[in-house]
Length: 445
Ligand SMILES: *[C@@H]1O[C@H](CO)[C@@H](O)[C@H](O)[C@H]1NC(C)=O
Ligand SMILES: *[C@@H]1O[C@H](CO)[C@@H](O)[C@H](O)[C@H]1NC(C)=O
Ligand SMILES: *[C@@H]1O[C@H](CO)[C@@H](O)[C@H](O)[C@H]1NC(C)=O
Ligand SMILES: *[C@@H]1O[C@H](CO)[C@@H](O)[C@H](O)[C@H]1NC(C)=O
Ligand SMILES: *[C@@H]1O[C@H](CO)[C@@H](O)[C@H](O)[C@H]1NC(C)=O
Ligand SMILES: *[C@@H]1O[C@H](CO)[C@@H](O)[C@H](O)[C@H]1NC(C)=O
Ligand SMILES: *[C@@H]1O[C@H](CO)[C@@H](O)[C@H](O)[C@H]1NC(C)=O
Ligand SMILES: *[C@@H]1O[C@H](CO)[C@@H](O)[C@H](O)[C@H]1NC(C)=O
Ligand SMILES: *[C@@H]1O[C@H](CO)[C@@H](O)[C@H](O)[C@H]1NC(C)=O
Image (cartoon, rainbow, N blue to C red; front, side, top):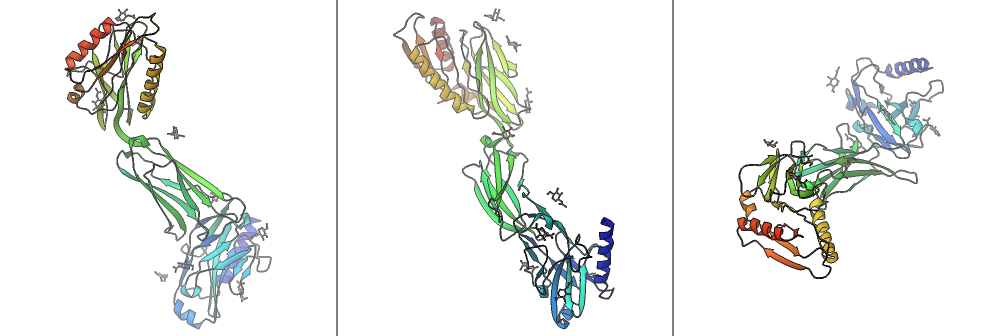
């Protein structure tokens, strides 16, 4: 069956090609493959070259453009001809328009109302009566091109670039391009989950093979908060069916940045020994490391995300997180040597504010219910300089009272900003050792 078709085709070609002298130089340029959407149209950009074209054109009485569909059977007379511009003969299609001007070597053609059975290889034939006839086919020469129309029910998802990591605070351009095989009904492009400051420019562009695509450019300055943001580009194709066809592509932004939101979490073990955990958010995070310092000391006391403190190690501590793009210090936290209670665990990069709100809520709740035995600490963003760190304001709120007391509590608010940092530590420890219930809050002013 297939063999029969091929032989038939070669026969047709020979018949059509050999109507002109063998040394003629001719070629056609068209895309190798176009993907068309059912119910839409497809434009085949097409130009051709023939030696002494102007001369032939002047001698010709009429010029016709013809499209041949390969799998049609030669047995049916003229069955293989999908289109003949001479009398606008159309077979197997509801509408075909030759929009290019053949006299200017332009054979651009639009096939309308595409159906599944239009998927095929198409050949262009030119008839300049009575001077010259040629079918541009690849059997005699590779340069003489044909076009394959590939019909699909759903369009290709748009292409979205780049997906490679970008440095924070740089301006990034995301390019989303969607094929527009039918330029008179191009797809519309929309973006979702994009930063507020993003600028969008969209235009129809011609590709090297002369087919069109809609290209939308999204421009914005990336922040570290955009790390892992999933940005979606959606292309909606209009078609002559009730439902438009929608396809989308998602890209996850990869932002590179030095440590941020470095803070310490105190996890109380049973009794008075605690574990301090240094939390930070950085990208890449695989080379993220932590160094611990005692207040006022230059030499690190430990490395790693966690340190254990016993009752006797009542000092202020801070940690410095580092990756290959830089480092950041946490706030100092003070270990009181008292048993503590803190279940705060912060996930992700945007946990800082959440944690603050959470802690505020918890704090006020506890103030109301007069619960006791607690210590929690908030650390927030801070510059690397440890000297400035030492002068940071520390506000301590301590509650004095007895366990069985239900009504009156005394709140002492002490601002240590004007005190020396050495005093601060002592004040706090003294204060705390005298009081059974303490609440410590370290914030950055
Ligand atoms: C055919 O024509 C093209 C451009 O007109 C030319 O570059 C090419 O060399 C020609 N080929 C032959 C075999 O004459
Ligand atoms: C195209 O139509 C013209 C005019 O009807 C006709 O002379 C010509 O043979 C047709 N071409 C083909 C390949 O059928
Ligand atoms: C495709 O199918 C439609 C009906 O389903 C028919 O009218 C048309 O002739 C077919 N076209 C081809 C090229 O086979
Ligand atoms: C060929 O014609 C089409 C349709 O009129 C037009 O869009 C295209 O620019 C033309 N191509 C050239 C090379 O002139
Ligand atoms: C045609 O489209 C189908 C999907 O509909 C795809 O699998 C196939 O690879 C495409 N063929 C070409 C030549 O692009
Ligand atoms: C983005 O998508 C990836 C993969 O589906 C997922 O792992 C990631 O959590 C998503 N990012 C956000 C911010 O939701
Ligand atoms: C705290 O740690 C010290 C030293 O490791 C240990 O001797 C003590 O028993 C621990 N206390 C509690 C309550 O676990
Ligand atoms: C800290 O204490 C925990 C549990 O008590 C223990 O598993 C861990 O190894 C200790 N870490 C260090 C650095 O001593
Ligand atoms: C921590 O990581 C940085 C960057 O990768 C590296 O330069 C530094 O030597 C590391 N420090 C430790 C203590 O491993």
